[in-house]
Image (cartoon, rainbow, N blue to C red; front, side):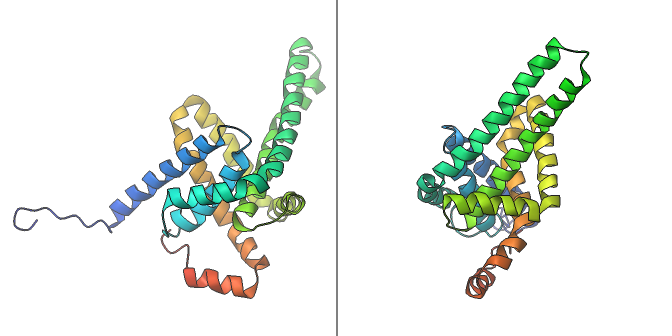
Length: 223
């Protein structure tokens, strides 16, 4: 305090942590809002990955401006990818509901309950594959077939990370079911996990020129 005026150091660790937490809420809320029409979920996820990588970790630019820019640019081209992922998820979810009703009607048939459990967890594999697809689209401009294919290749090439993501998704569903408030921050945290998981792979497939540009930008300097 000097001359009766208290001065704060906004660059200290405490304020930086508070700022990151606020950003995590902000990014998660943007993602949730722009996912509401359902068919926009893919573009919203691509935008969230881009923002988490460039703004949340790198501290470069404005969150809303970047989020909205990527969302608009990716919406039309990602629509078919979104519909493909959601159609597969809907199919698996239908199987979950069907097997659940079948298990309720036949409680003594063990295999019915086992198949229900398999389909239930298979939903998370579909979500994880979709997440890989749209993270890929958040870093590279590509067509529908290549995006779906490369998302699948990422899933298997980074299978341990994919299993970690599935575990996080299951934990997140459990937490949000009991404490819905956490839906306002969990999406950003999961995307941060994906950024750590995938960036080394993404850099390996980039051209030397692109890697040099990434190095100069030093996106991850703040986290």
